[in-house]
Length: 175
Ligand SMILES: *[C@@H]1O[C@H](CO)[C@@H](O)[C@H](O)[C@H]1NC(C)=O
Image 1 (cartoon, rainbow, N blue to C red):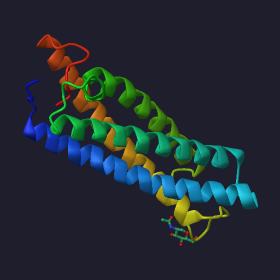
Image 2: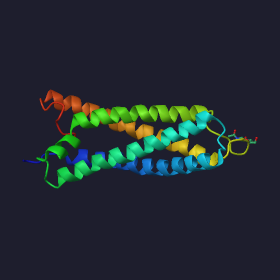
Image 3: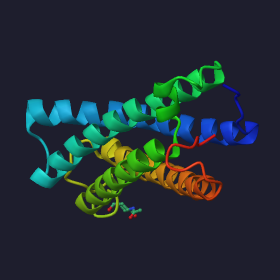
Image 4: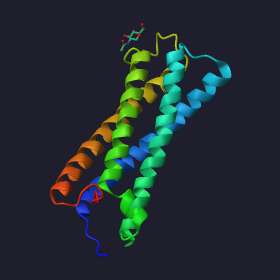
């Protein structure tokens, strides 16, 4: 099957999706460390803080795995096996739109909940929270990931609408 994809689209995709994987893995490390501390020492300030951290751990793991799957699809496509059904499905508009919207909901919930728990952000010189620096970092990375996922979702939605207009439909390629 002929391969036709836009080089510029692949580059933009690699930057936005690559940064999301990088930040999700950093967020995964921070939230896993905090979760381990909270579980071992019970030194969380509130149940909402503990549960928000657990949820961000889940969202980070979800996002890392999903975006690595997106990349495997892209590499598969570039390795000229686009005729492969699995690769076509993974690189499709429909697959991207569905899972990106779900991921966007996770990060909206995760970033908003940890921000509300921390009252917008902690002042580390006068807080009673343990792990002030880690908590602020977790909040900052959650908003960075939220921004990237929002960008990716909007770009893929536009691409999906254009490709639907061209008659390629739900399973047209994002590239
Ligand atoms: C943080 O708290 C310290 C000590 O109370 C205060 O001097 C400082 O101005 C506060 N910083 C911010 C950004 O509010």
